Each structure stands twice: as C-alpha cells, then as structure tokens.
Length: 146
Image (cartoon, rainbow, N blue to C red):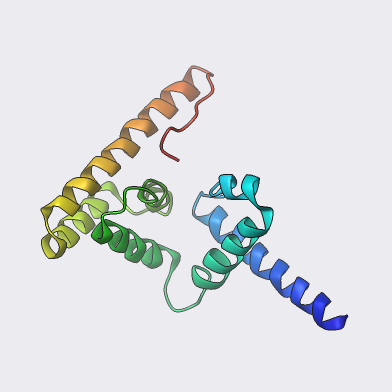
C-alpha cells in the first residue's frame, strides 16, 4: 500500500512541477482538449513532458523553447507550432529572434519549411492583434489556432 501512495505522490509532484513550467510559459490552458477527453492522459502529458522534460536542469526554459521551435519548424509540423510561437514571445524571445530561427532552420531543411513557419507565425501575430482588439472592446475572444 505504501508503494502505491508513494507512486501517487510522485505523479502529483511531477504534475505540479509541469504546471509551474506551463505557467512560466504562459500556457497553463494548453491541452485542455486532452483533459476533457481523458484526465489521466492530461496528467501524464503535463507531468512527463513539462514536469520531467521541460523542467530538467541544464537548459533554461528560453533555450528549451528555442530548441523546440527549431525542431518543430524543421519537421514542418502543421499543428503544435502555434502555441510554441506564443510561448516564445511570452518568454521574451523577440519577433526578430524567431525570424532568425526560421532563417537558420530554413537554410538546412529547405525553404518550404521556412514558408510553413512564416505562415504559422503570421497567423499567430494576426490573431494576437485580434485578441488585443477584442480585449480593448471588452469582447470575448476565442483562438481558432490553439
């Protein structure tokens, strides 16, 4: 019985560590579709991906975000990058630095990956403008990208 309690506590600690990382990234509402479908899957994702991987020592959160952004751009992912662009901006990575990541990656992986990245980042910038406008007008805003 003690082992089950210890395992449950460790899982909770991982989840809490993961939520702290998500909050630092401005992404605490990430993966809520997972939570709605399967709370267990959501807790595993937050605990492992953000608690164990993103929460590791050795690289700063900013560095991990740059590496992840570069990897996702290189893979030409059609989904998932939008939230990483937002996290990058939230963590203080500038628009110019994100563009430099696109150029660097595009050189090694081909210009189509750069074009895909430009499209995704532009969508985020446009949606951010729309969100800010809605906030100024006191209107609700729902992302179509996240």
